Image 1 (cartoon, rainbow, N blue to C red):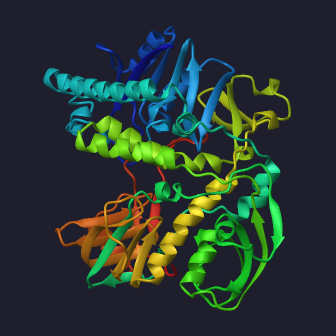
Image 2 (image 1 turned 135 degrees about the vertical axis):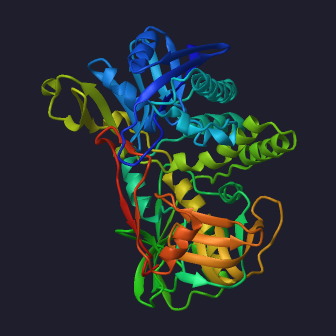
Image 3 (image 1 turned 90 degrees about the horizontal axis):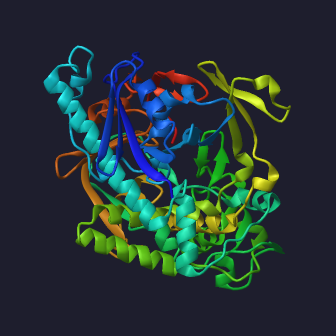
Length: 525
């Protein structure tokens, strides 16, 4: 296997409107640390590494470091992009990868030192004492990342993504072969495949006692149960006969909207509760939970879909990594703990991947030489990014029925929690905030744990809240922006906040830019 290196760069401190530029790069391998300092540090770094037959990782490189390297790539360089993130590319003999693709966690979750970022300002960083502090900080960042990356590769192999590594691990542990379905199979089941449930049931300020609860390893618990897994589908009129068949089925149902089932809208997933009659596409898990709770009144089941092949569960895989996670936690082996946690959460999503949405990308100086299947997708420096849909022979569809069933199982768990608890305020995927509950509390997988006891809530919308806990701190969410609890409280009171990010947005298509956002309370949740 090629030699593994890690790299990192430092720039001026982030400040709204100021495009940061690297002034130092660090490259680490085993006990060898090489540093490149000064205004030409990026060019010097590239000249050094381009002849290394190696794989070079940077953490979050796809959203930061590699954007400074990309202008130097050779003509006709292939570029692997995953959700806009630069996952991999080559420059000379070296291959550059984003370690976030295999380790989607902040480096601080493993180890990270602190530093005074004001030392990175141009007037301060070249002072000898400050320069040494910056070098030390850069060195330890590289060492910690190298430890993490090499341990992962030694354990799971040199895969480009965590999902691929998890799939390979599952096949080995469960002695299971992957299957490849078709785009048609995916399209038939796509209406039944949703993500997690996120809702705010009330907005504003609330002075009351309530509890935030989470499911212990919700998706891992779902994977302990049987789910559909096969290459074909059967369509049935009405409901299937027995409970186990219904659990693994997909149901098209017409019923009154009472906040039970999801629909897709332009703004995302919604659970309408307006007593209007609608058609819903749901999993058997959701149907059976609604029936058990006596929440389904007048309804009509149009069709049921089933996968006739033998069902699948992931018991051996889940039990293996759940035990590994607990052992690593007790023995304080942080890297192994993180690996086990990531493996538990990263397998099921691969079954729901839609490769027809993937593209191929090539960076070129000569876009005019490409045939009509390619089109310009972006520009940087003097180069064009050409894009085309992934050719059909490269599209490998897995069994989306499995992923749809697993996510439906967790939504059914959340439905039961919400409908049996007193005054739900908020929920998100595997957690609820309620005034009272009768949920099963415990440490076992699939049981609920109390995340926080709170006495005050400021809820401004989905992914935007501040809960004051009995420990005196705040549990907050503010997706896409960085807000203090006090700012969230003001927004929940009706004020509007203009967020000007210090950290720019890095895009291979649009360059480095700053995007201001107006944040205000959601009037309807």
